Length: 177
Image: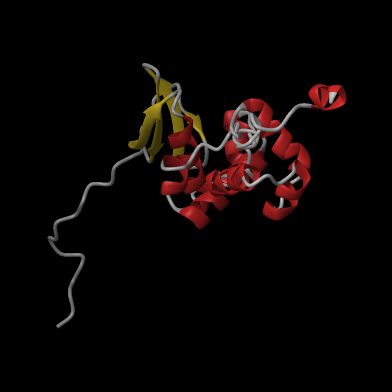
């Protein structure tokens, strides 16, 4: 039996997209506007995403998602947000590689030495305690000698204090003998 779609069927009323006047149109059906310190992303007049205007992680996630889903292009976002389009390409790549957790659960490594992680610091301290030189310690753990000196100066590593220094005369005492 074929359905006759022209007879009295329940027809849904088509909703026309209404965008607030302050909306900046990203594409034909996507727009963005700011209200009360929040940024709203709307699709066909309906809000889809919202975040605080200071929330950079959500901003990056949302714009990366829009590009990933082909809702808009990086250049369209670039025109709206006045940001280089390469940033939106990076956000999309980050989303593809790490999912949403890459934006919200990311470990902040700024200001930390990428070569001297905790395990290397412990190994370096063990070697220094055994009496290894700065250079030998550095070669042993695979870093530059300057890295060892830096961590000694900053207090992350301690110099080797020989155990029997009290029983050994110092140089000035040796010259007097």
